[in-house]
Image (cartoon, rainbow, N blue to C red):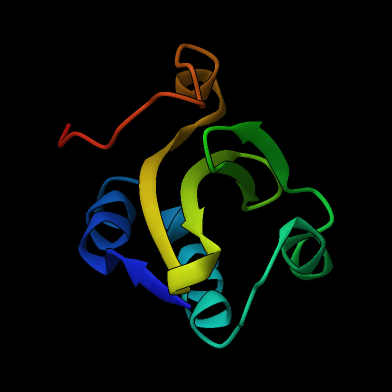
Length: 102
């Protein structure tokens, strides 16, 4: 899968250094996958949630952080829409959130 974009995750890791290893592992693992549907994503992570509008929520670092990604299976592309703490995640609508620089 192609992930857009690593700089978003890198910048988040600078602000939350404890998430850096988990995000790097997630990124590298997703790059090596070839998801075709939700079942494939769930094989990768059984805790992933589909929230509508092509959006999937991944738990990062033992559910301390949440990552919302839009996945377009036809083009094998993952778009980062949100990365934040669990508390920040609780304040957004994961089905409509779009990435903006903090």
